[in-house]
Structure formats: C-alpha cells, structure tokens
Length: 316
Length: 316
Image 1 (cartoon, rainbow over the protein chains, first blue to last red):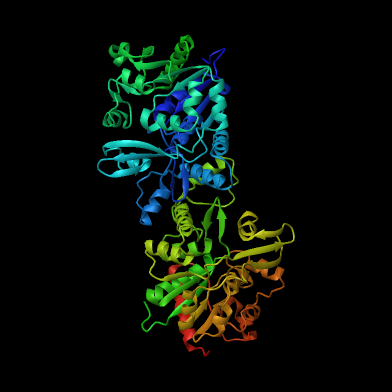
Image 2: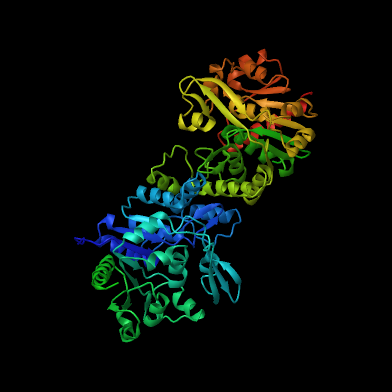
C-alpha cells in the first residue's frame, strides 16, 4: 500500500477538507516522506487559551483521534466545561470539547514558557503518535480578518463560527502578513520537496493565509519539485464550508479555470473533479480529472495515490 | 429555621471541614448576615490556570453544587480533560474535573484582565447563585510552604495532594505574609461582625494562613464581636486530612486545651466535641461541648445554631 521510492511531499493544508487528503497521503507515504504545512491564521485566543483549529484538525486526523462526524475536534469528546461556562453566564459560541481543552491548555502553557508554535506542535503531535511532520507555516502572529457587508470587519472565528459564514464578504486580509515569515523548517521542507500538494482547502480562507506568510510565495516559485493543487469544488459546490459562497462574493471564479487562475504561477497542474470534466480544458495548466470526493479512508488513499502519480509525470 | 434578629457573622474557613459549618451557617442565617473569609494560601498555578481550592470548596458548597462524596470539586464532574493530559504524557497528580476547569479558566482570564481575586470570586459565586459574601482574605500573593523531613520544602499542593500528606512536617511557613494585607472588605466585615466563627478547619494549614495575612490578627484583636472557634478534632482524630498528624509533628497539642492555646488571645470560647468532654475543663477559655461531627445537612444546621446561640451568651 505504501509507495516504494516515495517522493518527498509537502502538503499545504487548512482544516477539514485539507486534512482528508493529508490522511490519504499519510496512508500511501512513509511517515518521513510527508510534511504538512498548516494554516495558523485561524488561531485565536479564547479565555486566554491559544487555539489553533486548523493545526489541531490535521493533528487529530493524523493521530486517528479526530471526530469522524465533524472532521474537527476529538472523537468521543464531551462538553462539560462548556456547559459550566454557560452556567457562569458565558456566551459559549465556540465549541470547546473537554479533551480538546487539554490541547489548548498545554499549547498555551508551553507558548508562555517560551516554546515556539513549531516546537509546541511537534510535542503535541509526537505525544499523540503522529510520525509525519506537522509545521505551522509561521511562528509569527498572523490573523485572517473578514470584512463583511452586514457586520463590518470580523475576526475569522467570529465570521466562521459565531456568524456561521452567513455575512457577505467584501474583503479578506491577513493581519501580520507583512511581518510574519515562514519558519526555517517550512523553507527547508519546500526547498527539498519533490512534490508539493495544495490540498482541497478553501483557497481564500485556508490556503491564501499560508501563501501570505513572508517568504512562502518566493519559496514556492523557487521550488525544484512539482506543485499541484486539488480543487475544493465539485460541480460548483464546496464539499463543506463557505468557499463557493465567499469566492463569488469577492468576484472570484470557482470554475476549474478560475481556481487555476487563483493559483497561477504557483501550480504546475490542477486536480479537478469528474463533475467538472467539461470545463477542465479551459485551464492554463494541465488537469487531472478524477473523483475528488473523499468519504472513506480508501477514497482518501486512492486520491492521494493518483495525485502523487500524476504529479510525478508533470514537468516543472 | 432562619434566625430572627440574626447576628452579623463572619466565618473563617479553609476547605472541606470549614465548608460544612459554613453550609450550616448559611442554613440558619439570612444571606446578608453571613460573610465567609476564605484561605488563599493553597492557591497555585497548574498549566497557567489559577486554582483556588479552598475558595472553590466553599463556593461550590454554598451554591449546592459540591461533590457530596469528596466535599470538594463539582457533583457529577468528569475527567476527560485530565485523561487527555495523561495521553499527552503529563503527570496528572492533581485532579482537575472538566466542569471545575471552567472555574479556573474564568478566574485566570479575569485576573489577567486586571480584576482582583475578590472581584473574580464575587462574580463566580454570584453567577452560581451564592447570595452570601465570599471573600478571599487577601488579594495579594500568599503561599503555604511545608518543610518536610523526607522531601524538603514542598509547595502546599505537592505536600497535600502529590505526597498525600505523608511526609513528616518540620515547619510551615506562609510565603508573602509580610507583604500580604487583608482586603478592605475583610477588614470591614470583621469590624462590624457580631460573631466571628473560626470553622473546624486545619488550624495550621487552613486557619493560620488566614491569620497570617497582614492586619488580620490586629483586626481580630480589635473586634467588637465575640470570636469562637470550633475544634476540628474529635477524640484526638481529625475528621479528614492531616491535622492530627501534622500538629504533633510540629510539637503542637491537639487536645482541647492545646487548640485553645493555639488560638489564644483570638477566641473567647472553643467548641469541642462530646468525645473530648473530659478534657474541656482544662481550657483557658469557656467551652461548648457538643456533637461536632457533621454528616447531614441537619447536623450542620444544628451545630451552626448551637455555636451562634452560645457565642451570643459569651462576653468579649
């Protein structure tokens, strides 16, 4: 099942959608061949806890402890603490599972003790048995800000969780992007990667903040390996989340050609779903047309294997 | 059931034993007649959380949400977070219930935002429906340090929880006592109290750190009201905890006369258990001899009523 002569792969991943392909890649690659670069611009503080939703989703997924129903959070988690917070009169708009709190508490405690987010993430993931490398794109502050018609400027989690991505988006910005730099580990992973996979995460809310960290676009442009993206859209719809609503609100085209344009200059090919086969010819880069919906573990592994096989055939 | 013409009462209370009598007092006094001054020298930080075990025990008891089996913690609480911490390789020697974590998280968050421990405690207790006043003796840092034969100097929770009070105690000190001052609210409550009750808490580990806060002994000596203590010993044994082991290790006598001596100059009378009736005559202050074991809510109310009635008959 695991590829022999496996390439060194770096996957850029946001939350749930990205984590699915990461799980597939982890099934077909030896652990030391897979590095995941995660989004940190969704990170936020709640009651002083440093929460990293996207890193946690990937970490829990790789550790095999993710909640299979939601894709995020921990399997079998409870919400006793949250219910007690509600009893104290708090507005519990963000779901904090009891087990999940342990992750946030340790992360916060270790960050306060002077460890970097990269070091903290390695410790947490290692303790959960994750053998692949999981790297935050940057150790610097970086925060997605969503400017909306109805509610003005919103911090990401306010837009995404509190208002359930219903407000109309006028603009998305990444606060701190000018100062934030990719870590040395990320730079090195990209420089030595033979295949870079942009996972089917929300291009604007999950991938763009990874690309926004200083040095990221330069590192991708200077890559020796092949870079391919997997479109998160199937027949003009996102499998999950606001991508298919938000991108048109920003004037962005979510057709295969539109996604290829969004990643222009960064990718050598785009994987699009069979449902969009008719539009794949319009793209500026080569397309792999295949089933991209990942329901089962077998779907994830199959897509990962196809993506890697196809990427190996592409020219830089 | 509630006393008419009830006196203004201040109770000095540590953890579980003290909270039992506090619960009794709360049953027989109108809420605005009872102020509890709590010990904060057991407070400690765990993963950055500010934990106040004694204040919480009293607060949960007054709110009717305490775990009836242990006397501390919350009824029906779970330990999912703790189990996850263990999975991360942490030594989970201190039991942190999931619901309990909400209390610590809010306290820590509000303290970091600049509220005093007095304000935080009032907010938490108020939200849980506690109508009596619960006051930390001081808002300043104060920490019980236990010097032991076997393990040297231990922070209180290390002695009490981690080592289950098995080491032999050579000395007990209250770090910060020279700078710590009782709060204005505590000073005012003591100045206007008609009855001050030192609850049956560990004299050295729970009451002494309350007395150690700067201004406390002066406030008690300058009191207009009567002050009585309830001995925590029954037939030479403590109902719970290390008092009957620790005090002899420090050369202190746990007979009624010994306890009266320990509180000399501060109390106008001592309540001793019927089991110790034979020794009550040796005391330097008047004694009330009665059943002091509090198993049921009725026991607690009965003892509270007796203590208050007797205190009313004593001279300053």
